[in-house]
Image 1 (cartoon, rainbow, N blue to C red):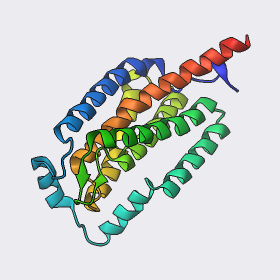
Image 2 (image 1 turned 90 degrees about the horizontal axis):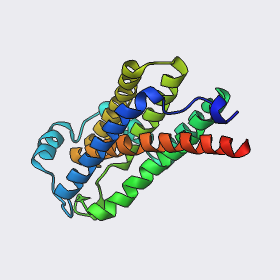
Image 3 (image 1 turned 60 degrees about the vertical axis):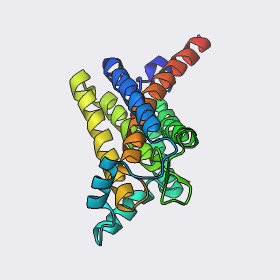
Image 4 (image 1 turned 90 degrees about the vertical axis):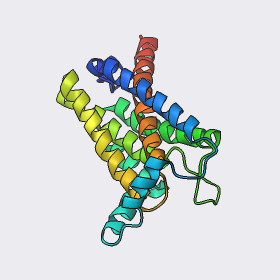
Amino acid sequence: MTGRSAPAVLSPSLRVWLGVIAALAALVVVVLGVLYADDSRPGLVDARIWAAVDGVGSPWRYVALATDFLGEPLGAATLVVAAVAGCLRLRSPRAAVLVVAGAGLTVGTTKLIKPLVGRTIHGDGNLSYPSGHTAFLTAFALVVALLATGRLGLGRTAGTSLVLAAALVAGAAMGWAQVALGAHYPTDVLGGWCTALAVTPAIAWLVDRMADWLVGQRR
């Protein structure tokens, strides 16, 4: 089932607030990118947070590794396939498209930004800003939360709260894992989180517009 009979993935009640949040998040991504362009050292905030989190021992290291796996190709693909299957089972084709497009384009955006910023870590040339792992899991959580908001019929306040809470939990979990494993600076994680907040709502809006256009073409 497609078209207007299918619910929008970006509820009208959330569009304005998520649009504002997306714009602010995009600004943060740009500002951090400028501040750390062509840098290879942690900033002051990075150093303080990294000193407290980096190099955790067991069992927390295993938790960090398990969380990190969710952002690796196999782990990410497993999450996406499971989510798409769930969306189709719930007769939500728009959400299924958003799972793939939202996560894929968010990660793609981080890959485009990395060489533009040129920030590296560990002195081995690995581009670190923004964190793709953090961007992926945050985007995935945003899509799931948007689907839940529509299914539950939540209003603007409750829906926005759910979406932001999901993004915060997912971003914090993956961000902690990346910093604890020494894969990213904390500001890389923040950049990845904000990239997801900036890109995913825009993709959701585009998915709705394209679906509505396709329905109009069939009439």
